[in-house]
Image (tube, rainbow, N blue to C red; front, side, top):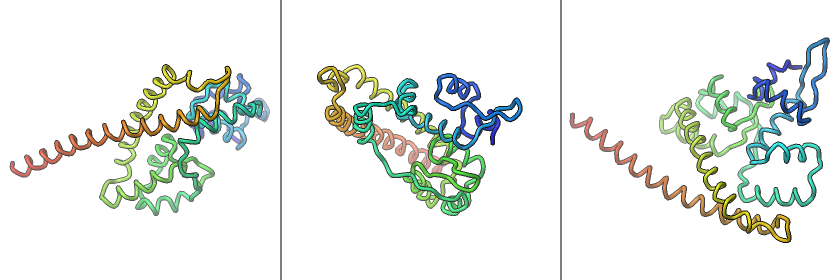
Length: 234
């Protein structure tokens, strides 16, 4: 059983946000032990679910419908149509010890905490994590083989994560302003139209991002090579 401070640390929220979720009815009340509220695994899982739904773009009103089981069949169909084109690998569970072995024994407490904050892994218990983004673990292994320490990789991934969130926000702003009308038929969201628009938007966004990223990497690599050559000459 956890106090609210312990719960906040475990799920990466503030106690203020937890109390706000309770007030909105999104989180069951704690179990009282004397005058102290205690929280258990049910509360931990509910808060992680709320965080995942927020990351997927749902507002608190929509999350309340999901958590209360009150979403309509139409809501479920539209949500699936929106999220399906972006689906990635299924999460896998692994022990922290096994994960550390894969990553050259460089998974210390700081790296693990930052990986949790990034949403790359989620704690299951004291010894096990759920790897939410297996592809990033594979890229970490590849970078280790090149000689890049895991801690340095984590810093870079944090920077990339912040930037790609801004990029995603820019494309969603375009969709909100210019594409919303294409998703509506007979005064309701049309799941087939939603899926078609989202799939096309995904391809366009990926192409724009890849093109600009290739150009940026070419320019940055050219600068790096010039710096190395200049240093060798000196």
